[in-house]
Length: 352
Ligand SMILES: C[S@@+](CC[C@H](N)C(=O)[O-])C[C@H]1O[C@@H](n2cnc3c(N)ncnc32)[C@H](O)[C@@H]1O
Image (cartoon, rainbow, N blue to C red; front, side):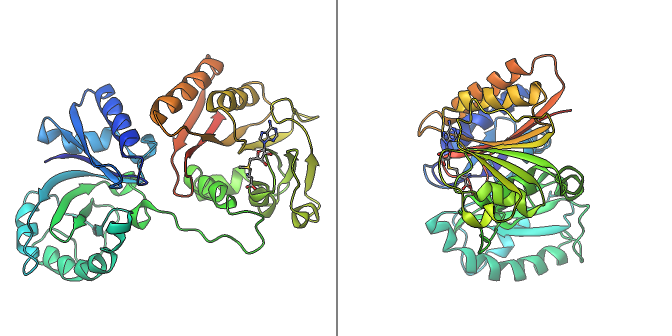
């Protein structure tokens, strides 16, 4: 079985499968998705086995909304003997390129997490064996491919490789963040993860500077505003609800009890627009595009709340709506289902 193996939040397998099917076909690579509901991953099997690595190259993680991590799956092993799992792995890896790092992982599901201790322990002898077999460099080498061993249980394993710059640096593709003790809500982490996902450290330094102006639509109680305030921004927080008093005491926040769809700042000096309003995705997408297109902000990070079904189609409708509104303008739009997102995705839109 060769193809692209992608991890997702449990329950989002069919959305990821639809996305992979469509995006692979756009790249003239054909196959079909293999998935099990709530398994936390999808294997998009290529009709031509030799298409697996080109597909992983043509469809990087940043371009797959519902994928947290992914690799070109080159071999799948079943009925592994617990007494010797290593020999069949070495045989299966015989044609793999020399890799610079090894990840031994499992699905982020209740059953999958039971494998975490096993995977951590198994990684030690496997790493040694792969080094001895000349499949892994003796020291970690960040310029070489990463070898993935993805266990779905103690006997079933998918093996493959990924280019180091095309994957998430985090184990299981999960950016673990701790809610700061003084943050007004846990959803604060969504914006923190979004900023760290969409902007490199250098971009954060130049584009999220102290003294900049931000607007937060649907701000209460203030988790997202908190992330801007802690980076030194001045924030116009728009919401009919109540803002956390600690944020108001910072002196960096002005609260407007207004409708986020009608609000516009007094001056066109806003760099960041963030929006977490619970509303129809198409309506929010249109609003964000209007702000960026008309110069009310330079960049926007926003959430789209998704329905229970046909989520990928809903995202496509919202993206089409932005495309239409931004016609004729050079812009960048990235969308991701982040770890801290639940029935929603986060997007970053800016004019180039
Ligand atoms: C998910 S909560 C926002 C949480 C916030 N991002 C945080 O981290 O604390 C959604 C908010 O959007 C607000 N909201 C929904 N529709 C709105 C509208 N049309 N105008 C302004 N705020 C709106 C709600 O009052 C609610 O406080």
